[in-house]
Structures are given as structure tokens and as C-alpha cells.
Length: 192
Image (cartoon, rainbow, N blue to C red; front, side):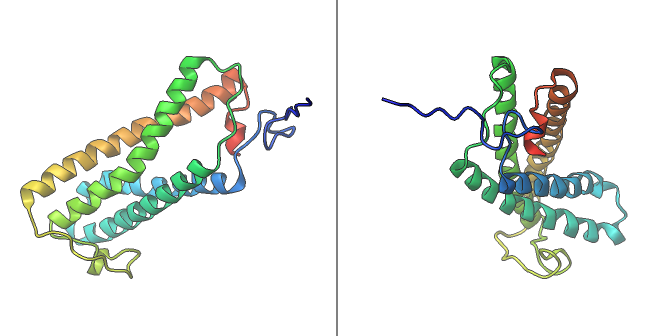
């Protein structure tokens, strides 16, 4: 019986000796990066903005968050149906576990975080309507009546998740740089 073995990983070439993610996966990754580059800093500075400009910042933050939610769901569906390239065999098990944990936590928080933010804004009495309509055009239905106590609890969780996402991003970027600059194992190149 002859067994055919694929000697080269999917997408392997001179620049990507260990294979690479497909074009759609790369687009999802970099669109997520761009949206997070908007949502996170704007979210962290809103509390320091003067009231007469605050609604514009909320509109940007909330629109980026809702878009991130949609992109994360689509990205997860893509990931579940399209396997990523395998990691090089020489990457130690603790690094594999850490990478997997960071990825799973990021996927989870990119889906859960916007939900908490959305319900917090509703509980504060500011659903995505009027000045904060999605992309300035699409109004979302109101899901609950104003409830200050609930709003503050949801905002606290939303804030904790925001800082957790930032920490995970630092770990993710740090890992990519470590693999590229120190280990030189081609891991970073898989997404470029």
C-alpha cells in the first residue's frame, strides 16, 4: 500500500518554510488589528474627554466594538472550518500551550467584550441611537431600561476585559517578536 505524505506544510515557500495562514485568515487578523487599534485607545481615553466631545468618542468606540464583534464571529467560523498551519515541531510544549491559551482567550474576549459594552450602554440609557448610532447611520433597538447599578457593574467588567485584552495583545505581540527575532523559527511569517 502506498501512502502519500505531504512533505511541505500548506502554503510553504522560501519566505514561509513552515507554511502560512490563508489569505482570508490573514485579512481577518489584520482587520481585527485595525479595529482594535481604534477601539482600545478610544475606550481608554473616553473618561478623560470633555463632555461636549464625549459622544463622538463613544460613537467611534461603539461602532468599532460592534464591528469587532461581527468580525470575531466570522473569524471564529472561518477558523473552525479552516485549520491553521501547524506550528514547527521544534517549538516546545510550554510555548505551544501559552500560544493556544492566548489565542483562545483573545477569541473569547473579542466576542464577549462588545456584548458587555453594548449592554452597559443600554443600562446607562444610551443605546446605539442618535449620536451613537452604529457608523452614525444604523440605530439598534433598546434592550433594557436605564439601570445605573447594573450599568456600573457591566462597565466594570467591560473595563477589566479591556485591560485583559491589552495584556493578551502584549503577550501575543511579544511572542511573535520573540519567535521572529530570537528563535527565528518562522512563526511570525505565517501571518505575513
